[in-house]
Length: 108
Image 1: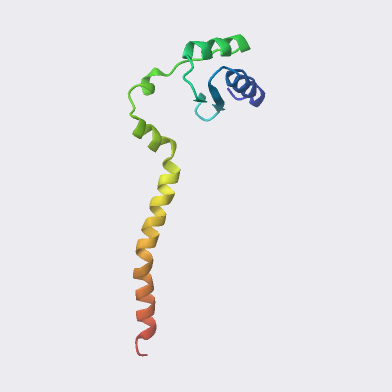
Image 2: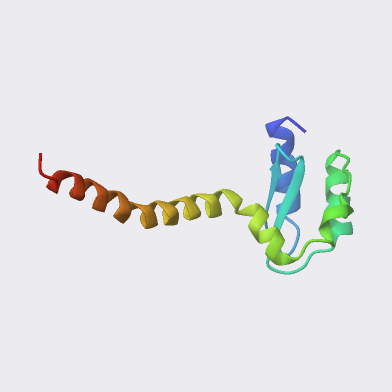
């Protein structure tokens, strides 16, 4: 799917189901991500999408095989990478500071 108005139609239709907090169509991965407060049946979601005039395919391969921790890491990989880089930079900064001060204190 590459049409923003089509995505908005699906998001609006799915968001109106009971217990659904919000729904987002991700263009890059061609997936529908649904946040809910109460579990909604996938059959109900599929029926609403089909009734809206769209078809869908289910990717079962990743749904049941990944642990919640792996899913969390995959969803937030960029944030974890940036945090890791910041920790490394903070750890290395004192070494550079000591070298710079030591260089300034050397007799000419």
